[in-house]
Length: 349
Image (tube, rainbow, N blue to C red; front, side, top):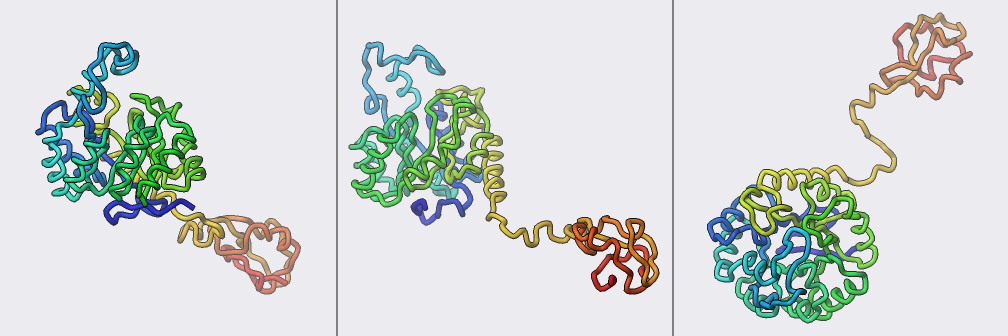
């Protein structure tokens, strides 16, 4: 059984509608007005929360002219880490306005801190939870720092192996976090659906006994919706106002109408799961009457032997079950039987 988890009194788990997070990341494109508009748009989609990323280029990396500080291949090919993070970072002076706007909409709002100073700063805004990004999962001192706040903690697994995930969970629990969950994540931008291996969601839940969600970097929403059937209880997805406007994460982000569709479809997928049916009682409701059953299809005189000319399996389903046909044939009518009567044992002898 997986441990209970909740954020700001909102229970999260297999019996609850999925908790959906709109990740704003760097899709503000350096414009506070656009960042606020993203929060407004997220509220319109029906998401539960918006999430920021709290770092500066100098707290997440350094400006160094060495090969390992430059990206090779993929969406950000050729860019230096410092340059990319300089563009993508959300200025700390914006956070108060963004938190205020989200709360005005009734949205949960929290962030991923990337160093201890970000945790100290975010605590002044009193977020209801924290997120540890995939590449920070191995930073157990940072996890302990976040866990010491006592807030619920969501951690993306990214490329971490099981030993590293176990280390992260141990750091979180020893640091003081009581509510911890993991997000299955493939750290590719964008990720290919065939690489997502959604059965990992069930494997993680079995291995670690916590709520498992999905941090989804694929294009579109199909993978997120499919993850609900595998047991995902949290969905995190990037959102942008318009991919055509560009930005560091725009290519694998959903526009507002698409994000709303994701929210609706994920909630519908969860509703469709329901509880397992064991005895099938009541399945089909009133339409059960249209199943097949045994009917008199030709008048039969009292005492006459019933043959296939007299009784057939037809719709509707108010007579004996079709499986009884071999038992019925050869019996005699206990009274005159009229064409169109549903067959009953009391009509036979």
